[in-house]
Amino acid sequence: MNEIKIQQLLKEFNLSNLKPLILIYGNEELTKGLFLEKVKSITPSTVFWGDSLDFKTLLNELGTKSLFQTERTVIVRNFDEFVNNLKKDEIKLFLETLKKVILPTRFIMVCSFDKIPSSEPYKTIVSLSDILVSSKLTPSGFYTSIKNKLSREGKKISEEDLKYLVSLLNNDLTLAKNEIEKLLLYTADKDTITKEDIDAVITPKFEDNVFIFLSQFFKKDKTALKILLNLIENGSHPFEIQSLILYQLEKTLYFKSLIDKGIDQEEAFKTVGITAPIQKANILNILKILNDEDLERLIKGLYNLEIQQKVFFQDPVEKLTEFVIKNLIK
Image (tube, one colour):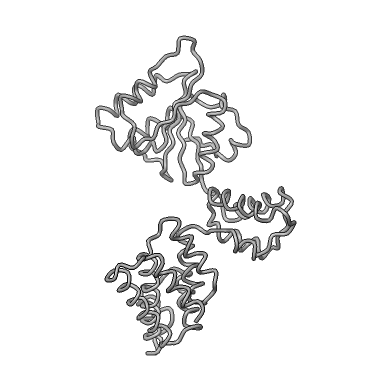
């Protein structure tokens, strides 16, 4: 199976070099989207979403012939969801239809999986199609892409601050595109980007954002408040955030009790169930900053917070924000 890297295809874009059937897979959504935008800019295109696409509707689209034989493209995003809903007899009919697709009609199937299944209908689709893979960049490639982007925009940044910026973007091109645009706008009147600029603008991905919030909260860093508000703005419920704070506190107390008994640090982490390096680092940092009394005070504060919210029906966002502010300034 010959595969074409979609990043390379974007640099040398020529749709006429591709077969009428195109299967796209991989875990980098931005490059998929950029490819589809290029396609739609040069040929009339109809886009469907696989989880809501009716089987007969697609067959009709693929079977439609233009009176003047003009170029047209049918695109199905979340194509794997469409396939999952097909019955056995529908798969057979679908494959027969694909074999009849010829130019000027094109059919682009966009999948979300990282590896193409070997079963039908994919086995036959692979034999009929050009395969485009849209994979995430390597860490070094991602680093270079961010560095080059800033350089093209005439921005200077230290090596240390660049590494910090890249670490917040989690090798995610979609996130990077949005966040770098914000950063460039924020620093429009200056030549050099600093860590302070990055902290003022960049919002990490949710998973990283949560751990960064916890780290900053326990260090009493006031940027924790900005991250908290962003988490809530992007759909995180206050109860979810509170449970994460409590989880971290309970794990920290349990870990400390094992260390106090003379248990090796790595064995203690294993017993507590902490494996991620960032979680381990958070617990060790908490123990450098807070003593047993501080930890117990925070746990009691969380229980009182839940009583205010769940028993007295006070606003969850407002009360959590007050709780965080109170503990940042103590």
